[in-house]
Structures are given as C-alpha cells and as structure tokens.
Image 1 (cartoon, rainbow, N blue to C red):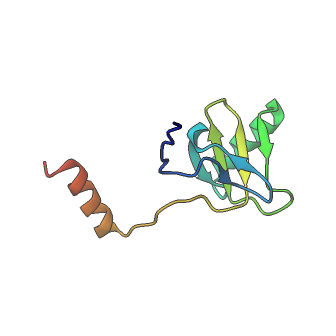
Image 2 (tube, one colour):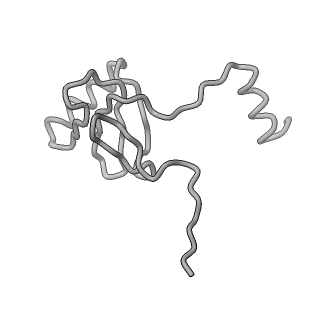
Length: 98
C-alpha cells in the first residue's frame, strides 16, 4: 500500500508564465523594488547564476535559492499579510508572554 504524505505548501510554486520553483529550495523571497536586491540580481546575471522566469513580464519578486541561484518571478508569492494586532497575537500564542 502506498502512503502519501500531506504537504502544507504546494510541491511547486508558479512563478511565471510557465515557470515553477520547488518551495523547499527557496531561502528568501524579496521584492524587486529594493536597490540591494536589484544589485544582487545584476551580480548574479554577470556570474551566470540568474534564472529569469518572467517571460517578458514585469519582475515582482527575486527568489534566492539554496544553490546560490537567483530566480526572477512575475507572479506574487503565496504570503500572508497580517496587521500588527494579529501578528502580536500570533507571537504570544506561539511563544507565550515573557
């Protein structure tokens, strides 16, 4: 009998028109608008470590992979946005009051 393990995140994240990335390989997802992120992308391109999965669309995210590669993504990443009160409650629930 085959057992399947459930995953809390999709096996592959869509990051472009036809691009997919394995979420367990992603170390950091950063917004493209930041100047340091743009510099890191230019340096990765010069070193041959840049993977452009935007297919001509406007870049929204830069993904830093565990292999040292950077991925340009045009599709928003699956993130959760919370206001300050919700975040405080989450932290208190998880770590307790100290």
